[in-house]
Length: 136
Image (cartoon, rainbow, N blue to C red; front, top):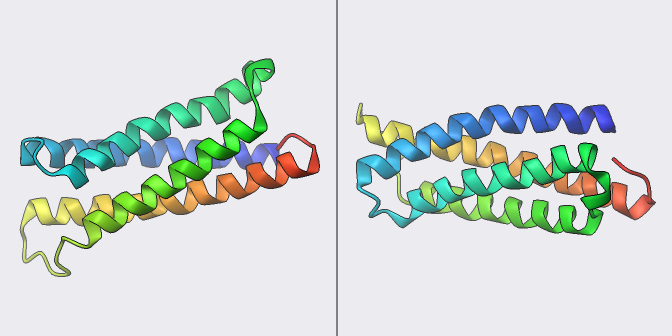
């Protein structure tokens, strides 16, 4: 499971870079007045910190890592991504008719749902690992 977890963390890092760019653009275009875009930008930065804890600290500084804290952080992160993705999806139309900001919001929503699914899977992996007593 260690190898799978490392690969999943790498995929999350790639998606986070994409999501960070998309949501930073949306926050910039809205002047910071759209709370749903601000929240998704927060999600990107929050997830970066959580991935550092569950990925780097777990492997490099294992004495500082606690499985229950990692599980709680990943579960909270998954809820954040779900809430933020739903908030954006509820406000954007299905057809953007060439409006660039709308298309960026659609892409941010799609990557948000991908990150929700991945962080949920990481939480499940972490939960199974902490339940069995072995490190995942």
